[in-house]
Amino acid sequence: MSRFSWLESRPQGLFVRPGDFFLDPLRPVPRAVISHAHTDHARPGHDEVIATPETCALLEARFGHGAFGRLRPLPLGARITLGEVRLWLAPAGHVLGSAQIVLEYQGTRVVWSGDFKRRPDPTCTAFAPVRCDLWITEATFGLPVFRHPPAEDEIAKLVRAQTDNPERAIVVGVYALGKCQRLIALLRAAGYDRPIYLHGALLPLCALYEQLGVRLGPCLPATVGERGQARRELAGAIVLAPPSALADRWIRRLPDPLIALASGWMRVKQRAKQRGVELPLVISDHADWDELLATCSEVAAEEVWITHGREEALSYALAQRGIAARSLALLGYEDESG
Image 1 (cartoon, rainbow, N blue to C red):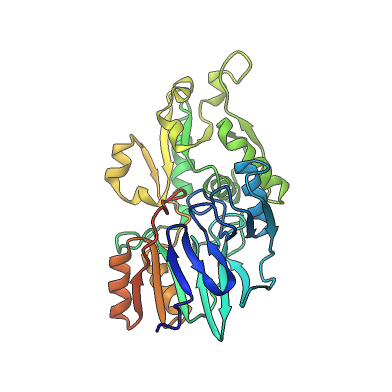
Image 2: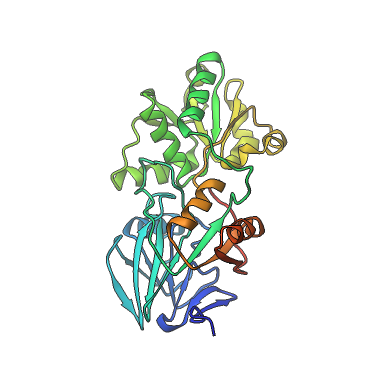
């Protein structure tokens, strides 16, 4: 019998039997430990949720008061015992509040990575590797083609596009949680101090980030009409919007919009072309191929399970390095953040 047989793959998600809880379950359960607030990992309806204080705040903002029976905040590094399992959270560096879930049972340590990234991000706590016996990892960008460039270089492209197109609105598609706030912070770090205009769907989470201590600088709603900005005010401005808004009627109100999209998927030129993206920005909130391999080695696990993404390529590459790896058959995790 495997020393990890106390972990069970069930229709709801991965069940930790000696602790009687699930990790990032996809269906309502009595008790869930949630790594972060993206909706492919966090679903409403659980009786009890354990997550970082920031994730708890984001869950309530995204799903509404009463969407969960009880939200139980657990700060990074604080230890609790559930049944026979000792549990604590380590930073994942993915988005604000994101955490790796660390399980200790009968002398064995298992780490559930959630989604994670290794690049610096001023909007969240940096990833911290945790040595373990079993590492359960994502593989969103688990192919050698995915090697992310420095985010600062991509931001420089964005600023150049703005300078070169003073009559056009530079509209950047960003996911509402994480990517939006990180892009703003990267612009600020590059010295951009002008107002950044936001689609209405992005405003609530940006306001919550500010309440949680993440400073974003001047951000204004991007509205055009009788009570909004004149079109000329948005000419040459940087406007952030959800990716879905790039094909919406809303964008037609902006002056000659130049369409950009910030995502690790923009490495694939055909994806950018299919979406009508004029300025692809390869800015990802996930580990790339080299970072996945490096992290698997760094945590020194004797075994690696891969939850979603490009499992076969990563499993093969790890086997070539003498690390036992296999795909963990969990359905429903889709990339929300790129």
